[in-house]
Image (cartoon, rainbow, N blue to C red):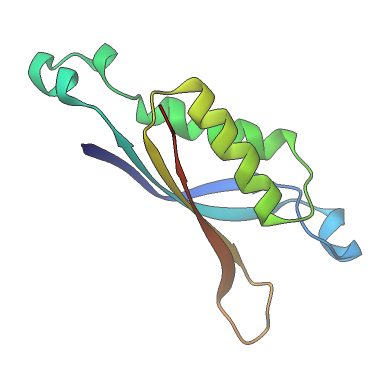
Length: 118
């Protein structure tokens, strides 16, 4: 099992429960840890045999741009569903941070783990 990670991905989206959150986009910060079989890419050195990091990041940003969820939990499900449908992912850990929401905390957020059953 090999892993691909993307850390600190900025994803603008409309998200939030409160009225003031619904007036403008918020930039969320996301970390992804993807378990996948990358052995073919390791042997071939061919980008077509791996998961394209840029395509993963773009997919996440597309979900964020087209959504208007109230909860991070709902957004995380949409991202997980889209990524697992598009890429050969065996396991995905997605962390979503929402900075500047609580006055006494730098950020709040969630972390979800999704394993694809075969």
